[in-house]
Image 1 (cartoon, rainbow, N blue to C red):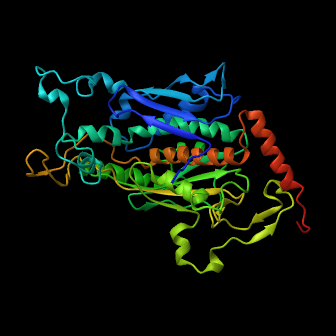
Image 2: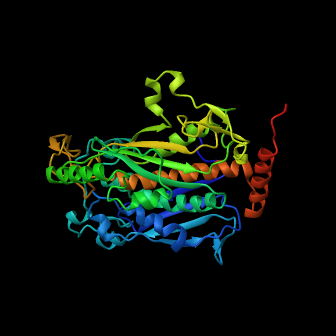
Image 3: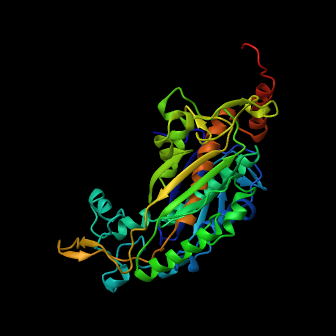
Length: 406
């Protein structure tokens, strides 16, 4: 399954290596882009959230632009960025690309032989024929998502040119559910970012903070659910003609690909499976002012903005369920020593207690990449002027469509 077609992105790098590489191809020429304005703020948002570990005190993620932009505008060529790891200076021996020095103290290589349940440690060493789980965990680490956020920030900048905005908030942590407001606030991210756990319910947020404190004291971890909302998305992105072109499938795959995400739903999702159809499907009504939706609207949005794999013009609503982080500091789970097969407790590695607020920001990035891809798939061109002409022409067609036979 190919999640992205008109756009493509790749990331590279290890958690404690020299840095992370983000490579994004398919952005048209002529898009105004500045790292300080458009990319670095999202990198900073990803580092926030109550429950993050000491690594966030070390890093101060900034994207160093390498290619694809000249004089403040994209060139249409691949955009490459590097996010340097400040912690690299403490790992130059353990993460060196050179063959090991036989005279070096073995502890300097920071080998790990006790795989953690829930992590890629064991499956990785089996798949790639390794013994030291350091060879696996460095790439499997969620540190990789910083590069995704950099790519997603560029996609968000593109979408903003066409009136599409993306925000997120945390619905639950550790089983504590936030109350969903009747209407989401304007400037969703500004409101959510003001909360230490990025929720819209202050009372629930205080209980989430307390639960994170309790989990930290117990050496445990907590997961939760975040929601990503995209507004201003025009009707008609995606397609129903082939299984791998359905936008809901592409969104679900992108969000599920985020480390530690074990469930995704769109709109009502699993709740809709418990209701009769009369309480699930969104009534269609005329709205002559909604010319960008062809003069139609929905009186509800249980579908989460997607029907038949195609956007409806209503807000797109995607949720991700994040499992608790697999590194437990005190309540370590049973494991096996890869050197001799003896029963042991799983290893510890510097980690977070809860990263749901940060995962929501990564979710925004993945949704942005999928929507930008779908937008270019429908309105694509080599330059922003060409994309705008195609986009405006489509909106003109929708506004002039009328109500007679077609």
